[in-house]
Length: 163
Image 1 (cartoon, rainbow, N blue to C red):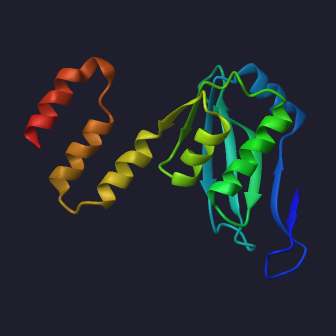
Image 2 (cartoon, rainbow, N blue to C red):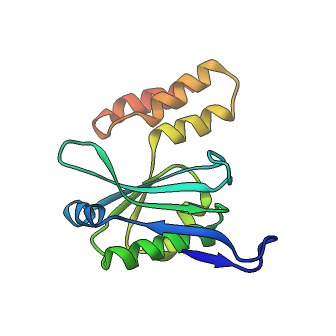
C-alpha cells in the first residue's frame, strides 16, 4: 500500500497492490505471457483497477495480481509492475505483455521489463481504429486487417490493395 501526502486530502490511500499465495503459484506455472487490463471510474472512490493475468492450460485468463490506483499515469503503472516484480520475486521468465493501446502501460513495460515483447490486443486495436473513422467500409477493412493471421498474408495483401 502507498500513501501520498501531496494529494488534496492528506494521508489518503492512493495505491494498493496485492496477490494471494495461490496467484503467486499460478504465475510461477505460467509466467511467459502476462496480460494487463485496467478499468477506471468503476467504484465510488474512482480508483482505477488493474489486473495482471496469465493464461492457464485450459486457455482461461487467470488473475495473478490486482492493483488500485488513483491515477493511470506511467508512474502508477511502473509502481504496479515494480510491485509485481517484488511480489513474484522473479519476473524474468515473462516474455510478452498483452495490453490495450494505453500509452502509460506500454511505456511502463518498456521501462520495467525491457526484455519483454509488447503485444497489443487485436480487439482494442480494432476498436481504436474504428473510432477514428465513420466510414463503415473502412471500419470493416480495418477490423479484417487486424484479424489476419500469419498464414493469410495473401489475404492481407488483397485487403491492402482494396483500400
